[in-house]
Length: 116
Length: 111
Image 1 (cartoon, rainbow over the protein chains, first blue to last red):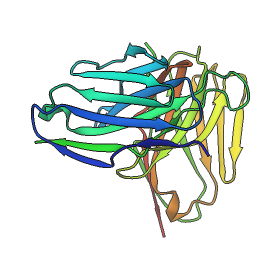
Image 2: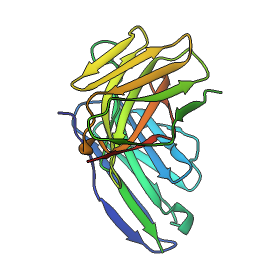
Image 3: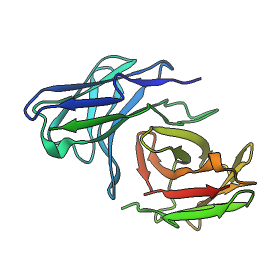
């Protein structure tokens, strides 16, 4: 079974703190993604990465950065956490293979971040 | 711009009923389409992936169909159970790395 594991289910951080959200996948997938999910706004893409050390901005990158030093790990960094970054954060991974299961995306269990 | 719409936003049915969830998209030039389920406070669980060359996929009591020309996909759930209660999301792939999600349909199956 594909596994995408996020380091924390719940986090509470203070305004101004630097926050790291970690995501690890075990299927040798090329692509990894970070989304946030808010009521009424759905899933919004923050950043994605298609290879080690490569990253692309998504729809809402402001206030976030990412790091992908190893293929299996993709980190989301909140440089200075703010209350409007309170949200559910979801990590996903997928392959570039065009055959078989194609590019099926798999998600982690989510991290509920609260910034106080 | 690709828009993905899921109707209805919420659905409540008695146990045992067969039901259909709908997903529509505005641009038929899609790569794949994927259905997910999300339980409250949890991540997304992949249910079915339909590649653009396919018309349908089946897994157990679930059947998903894709009609690219009309911009529609349906997820059919047979003999619904209370454990099927969740939010169901569809995602349209514009490319390998570009997925657009619908807002979801919240399904409640009453015992």
